Image (cartoon, rainbow, N blue to C red):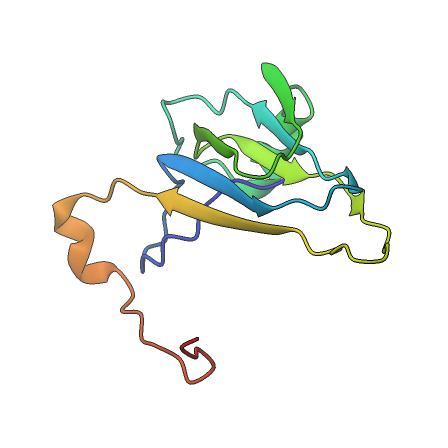
Length: 133
């Protein structure tokens, strides 16, 4: 289980995403499993509670307020609160003639960052491993 916190903000505080979008670009027809599981947990203090350690937050995941499981379907977009704990179930895709076993999804995490912290965000640079197609 994890919560989306990949904002790239130089800060001792954790910053959870405001919302997360998952686009299922390719889902093999014979794929089994791969459901997106979601849990909403009461961390207290609003959307993202400050001062709660990862260990404490994970203990609270064991007693969720709500649970959901979403089966991946090609072309679907799933949107959920960024502070929801989530994971992807194990999946398998048996190879068959003329089919693909690759599952492709694109994730967009959206954050609300106070203007006073803009200067603390990491600068992203194009890496040499990125290539144009």
